[in-house]
Image 1 (cartoon, helix red, strand yellow):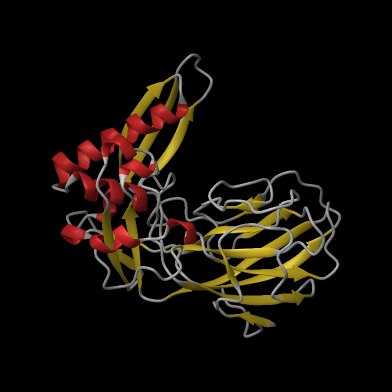
Image 2 (image 1 turned 180 degrees about the vertical axis):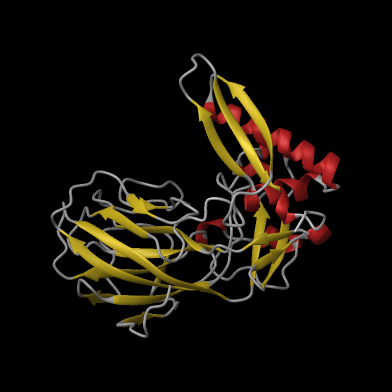
Length: 322
């Protein structure tokens, strides 16, 4: 979506404007008015520690304390606790490359850390609207900010990894350009930050990362004092499939009385399928699941067991029908 040329503020990604935690005491880098449009320069989630030429060996030196480097915060003049911040996402621009990583299993991160003890990395070429994987696989690009939110009410330093009622690391892949997020404000001035941009992601982000990429994000902000929210809400046009239209899918399922375990079983089945039928290594299959496979709740009413399925878009493979 075009900004019609109007950008009221530009926030560069510098040591003065970047942070890797939430803290209501952090000084804002800029104060804006309701109605202003702001372009944020966002580093990748790892704060530039990885680049287009990185290899899996570089993960040994990765400082995970820098993960979810965010740009901000900005203050919204007049924002008070109890207000709602409307964030219209106008435009996202990537820099031509991204990566998906698997961290060592001993860190306990991702959906299946016990099954992937060794780190893995794929650096994606982002051109012509797709992210290029191995074996001719192309994942359509649908850029979005993985983390956006306002400061929490509780004082002190807070980890960026878990999402919160004020937003944060939500990883909602449908917050693409043209979408609008509504965030409940918890502190004076709101203190909004954004980052952790993804060029693409499967619902679930199962290996702990989507297609992580440095980007610029342009948003327009409005204060909505008449709204009353306890948790984020949003409006979006999707796309709700990888191609943006109905397309052939291959599904695997997990069934059990624990939704997380059912999700694990669905992804295990998809990794097995991609390994046996598509010729991927298990590490490649895990990465592809994180970038392009959607986890869905099929039912949560047939007690005592729930159904979770993993959906693989078959159009991403080079032998797919046009």
